[in-house]
Amino acid sequence: MKLERNRRVKKLAIWTWSWVATMAIASFGPEFIWDNHPFLTPFAIIVNFANGILMILANRDLFNHFDELEKKIHLESLAITLGLAVVVGLTYSLLDTTNVIKQNAQISMLVMFIGITYLTSVIINTLRYR
Amino acid sequence: MKNRIRDLRTERGMTQEDLAEIIGVSRQTINAIEKEKFDPSLPTAFRLARLFELKIEELFSYEQG
Image 1 (cartoon, rainbow over the protein chains, first blue to last red):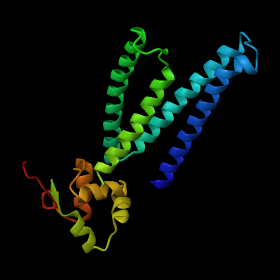
Image 2 (cartoon, helix red, strand yellow):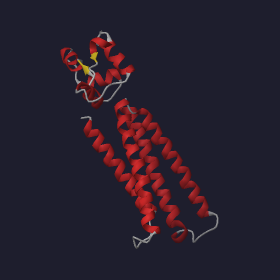
Image 3 (cartoon, rainbow over the protein chains, first blue to last red):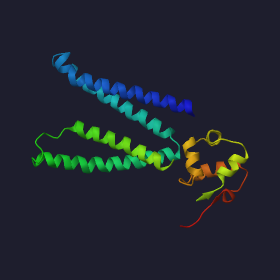
């Protein structure tokens, strides 16, 4: 069971790092590597998108290997994260469109918020069942 | 839901890790079930009852809160 778990965690880690790397290439490549080549930029974005899909599938594989308590912990954390992401994301967008905040709303801020919220929720839920 | 898993496990000289391995769940899950913080699924409850050679109602008792 542990060996299989480790295998799936490694698979997810590989696809996640690969997704981050292809995201960086697609972001900085047009300016610093291939000088806005008309074919290479969309190609890099497609590769990054495909990589993201494989990362999601690897995450699903890991989730399917969780036992019942782990699934409950992660489902509760996902519910909290999804709810907060929608509410906080739309509030953040509203603050931008109504010019309450000076800077433009960045999607990267929402992604960071989602990551931190999910991690915190998993830690709190895990502690609840200790 | 109350259960007798901790007593039965220690009587047999098993660790939580051993029991988790046999039942096919994590050690944390066994710990949460023993502490009655988490109610197992029906298949897990049946596996535990079979392992301890008891009827499911002899292993678990439901107390309406």
